[in-house]
Image 1: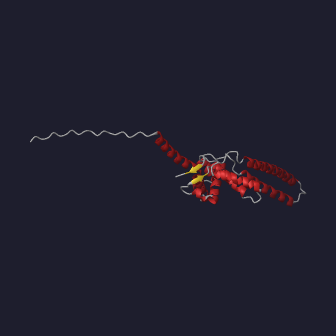
Image 2: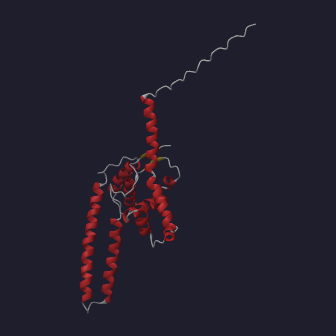
Image 3: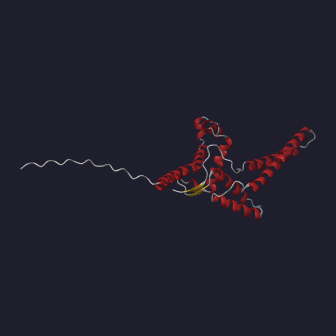
Length: 233
């Protein structure tokens, strides 16, 4: 019986994958964007946490730096104002918004600029002598900030008042210093008067420093985080 001829094997036809639709491509790009925006958004929180660790554990001394400012400037190229802005925001979150410091925070998280604005707003709202109408208005601004809806001009009226107060304190401080200098030149001036002037100058210096250190809208340190939005997994 004759052997049957072996059938020739037909090579498998390689099927090309179906091309992505524009909608599929758009969804993939959007997913990548959301991940990158989330990382950028919370970057300043992670920076603040690490800087606080260096500060609290005095890790800068292990690298032969005398203080945090020297460490930040020489090792990180981070200026003094930027360093303290990160640390201020971190310490504020530890006290008032610890959930934002969790490893994978969810929900709304402000960007660095809005975080600074919220610090200022909450300090103002904590004042016992705040006028009721001002408190109501600031609570509305706070709500907008917590929803990521704060606009550049929303705090302008309040900060203009603060700037006026700072200017007034500066003027008084300058006059007190001049008065103290002239008083010290008088040999008949009682020492108690000099001591009282020194005390008044110190009080004004502290008040002026507190007001001047309040974050201003739009201000952000170098290497800051990206614009805020709602963080989603």
